[in-house]
Image 1: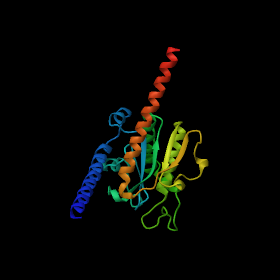
Image 2: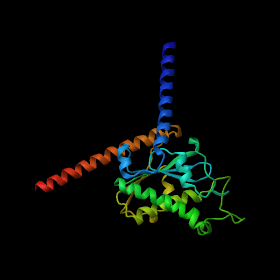
Image 3: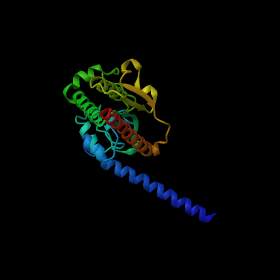
Length: 237
């Protein structure tokens, strides 16, 4: 019995170390914007990850299954008392949606479009954006505690807009909850397929996202291999 307990403790320690290593490596990879070529070289999938902040309702975009302080600094450029720069704490961020695109150029275009829409709303059209938000009796953006649902709603609307504006066909969106995406009338059925993320323990979020990345990379490689074989066959014919 004592030997079994020692073995279990050793295995548990090993798993904890692996989880910590994944978080550190993921954060390092997340630093800086990625080109299509860099995503391929890093063995990343053509994806964009939307993380929601459980405390504030803010949403962070990432090209990798992790996030970095560098991304927070770049995406929250004009903080104020209603839209403070969020904390980097891992326990405050939960994945809201994983968007998988048909190719790496689509993924890069979608990420840049989302970030640019955020910056336009927070800097260039700040007054116009605030005028469209739900207000409380004092005329401020509606909130409960420190949570403002308008930020996640705007992120979902921006995602739908980017996909439709750039005509990003064969996009697959996996939501942590189906109701997050809103009414189907806001999405182009010809461009988007909706799915739901499998249930997971928040502590295992990094593992889940890494598995989704690996699966998407494998599927993308198989699809491209099939297309290459078809092109070769058509040339021979």
